[in-house]
Length: 381
Image (cartoon, rainbow, N blue to C red; front, side, top):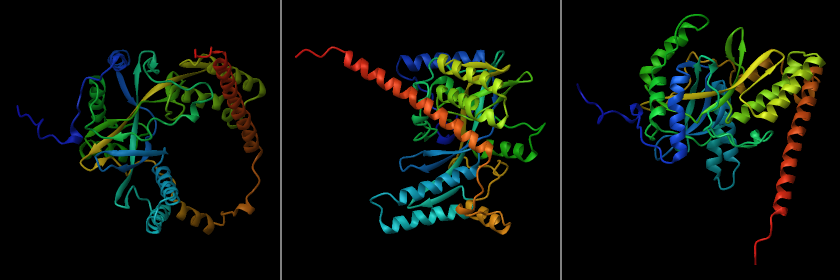
């Protein structure tokens, strides 16, 4: 049997090393147990897209999240170029090139470009969940959940600044998971288009390696006996809970036209979710669960995988989009905008109430912390 280990390229290498410290050992034990308790790996919703920058020392740094479409990442990258151009310390030539790059993204669908000698790329990450007899895997005890109720959105997303580098060492369980996910191929059948399956098979050969992002968390709902995604990935379990609470208090009442009686049921469910910080909640006969989401980025000889031709990318760049609206007579200047609908106004008021509630919680915590600080005895002189 031939041994290719010495000649294997980095993007096809999984370096499994012992992770130091008791917390890492506990996380490794949990990950190994999850392979038994939640043995089935399955895709979960749309890919997420990030905008990244190649590093001089190797790997690609994630600069930010673009959302569930490649165009969202392109738009965010253009905004990043404009912000960088406005920073102090930039020469006029640097500002000109950064602005030109942003303007080009306004008109052309580009998933990679070189600006000031650095390569930037839009990359895709596929989400997966583990499924067991009782449903999708919830957060593990070792998963960080540092945010207080109402405070999750103020904490940075752990994926920002993450370096996509297949050579980085990993634990045994994560290494095995990387290998398992690298073999994943979208199967034909049902609503899955043929082009999507073909792109998935092709990616297994063009980008055979895999890197896992920091674990994310979302909300799943059990509908007709099957668990379905209810929200996209969030950085922490508390962030996912607050996404669900926002749906209960703000979006659901308006979008689904709940009666006042039904609204009260969901408000009570949101209060329970805030108070218990649990992994699930039942509201109006609907069952929701906080679930653990693994996200894989495929790696090839030239780095992380960009969007695929079959990926859902419905929106054109902002330049052609505005031009299309003007040609169709649908473009409105700011002073010509129609007044917001009653639904939009109601949602705005509910959102104000929710943000005020969160701010009040934060003020209460600050007040209690200040009282505790004053109650502490003074250090001896």
